[in-house]
Image (cartoon, rainbow, N blue to C red):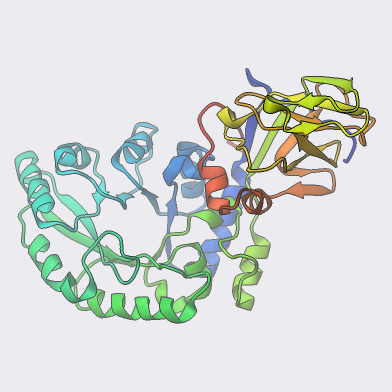
Length: 381
């Protein structure tokens, strides 16, 4: 209810991230229903800032069959947390890490012959198979052979002892905004993949899962949508995608508390270099969060937070550990009130999309850039 502060979560710091794992489970079920095929939960970048292991567990509980990560350390983190489901390392894994990848039973993306030979040698020495999903570059311009070279690369890697080419995959460059190019990517990928006897074919990210039934094959890889955020800006172009986005539940609230409130006189400077000066007497609150917590500075004095369900503007530059807000127009605001940086309070909500627009970036970056310092509090474990 607006105007009523929420109780403080039990953490050692007043700034924390509250992650609703039931929302993650809900979103996985919605996406599985939309896709109708197996689902790989993409939990790279610390689960898009939400926490890699708790998110992975929740997604698997809701029916995801795979986890997708960017690098070997992320995959090992999941294994050490007790995750036994198949894990695909979608990025580059150096040859020097071949034995470690095989020991942890990880699927890796092999696309270079020399690296693949190192993995083959390690697999033979360890007497354990190295399972690979080879990425095909159908237009992204990143990892993997282009379709014209893919057949030779796949055949060469598949011929190596100890290597099992379990899957082929690609990544859609602009699935949320360019259906024609996305469908051409899918056509190129299908031409390569369907001529090979592989167990898994996958191409669709979050937007692709909602937009392209022909590209779901037998596995999809949603990331952003797992966390209740939309990959579309501003709105999905198809009714089916709009319906899916409308059903997603944001999983993250970012909160802190008011640490101090005082009246400052007209003309008083606030923060480093006094980039803001009070226009008339203002009631200024200090909140213990700053860019050291991932709450980024902006090129101008901008941005708002929620206090008692109402918007309070940030005043002055965000500091490393603190920033200041104007609560003059919220007379009920008091010491230790909850302050919402991201998420809902009362009848209002500050979304990742809103913050991204202010920062001149995308909603992906808003959450994935969150560092370890803010404690994560998990609901629904």
